[in-house]
Image 1 (cartoon, rainbow, N blue to C red):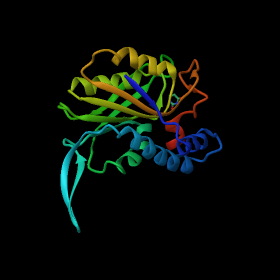
Image 2 (image 1 turned 90 degrees about the vertical axis):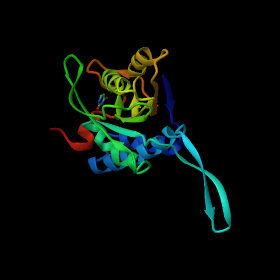
Image 3 (image 1 turned 120 degrees about the vertical axis):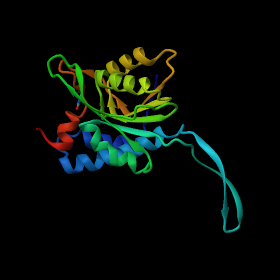
Image 4 (image 1 turned 30 degrees about the horizontal axis):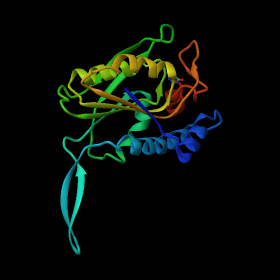
Length: 213
Ligand code: URA
């Protein structure tokens, strides 16, 4: 498992405004959208391409286009929905699957309540959208579902990650798994608190995007 921390000044700026408890929900949604596009741009750096020749007004030019099949994008409900537009802006032709996970606030164990994924992902690249990599339980489960369907690579795009969650994923997918796993994030924070929240973090990403329900 590899971790890529994007320490670009624009990313750091947007993340800092997101962290601020005074940032309003509309501003939080807009900044999340912009930040995901920046993270996604870096997350796609290793995408496979195929050589093509096009004809410019002055003659032939060698180039490259993204290889088939199109990647699959999987937002983890609910907070991952707030990341979908920012990702789809760069990959408009990607298929979109959904996984719904809810975390028990006492045990911190995540359970699956929705699953709309293709049954066969053989050889496909998958981008999972989950803003907060905290305990890693959710992503471990989702990556397991994707690997079980044959995904070649899984890249988790996260606004923030905790060392505990990264360690859990590295233990689960660090060896010689057929699926190659990467985490792309804007920052790795200090730790989790006893309620499984990232410190200093940005609070509950779902609540800040969509309000408390
Ligand atoms: N989920 C969140 O929304 N925030 C955290 O800090 C941890 C998990």
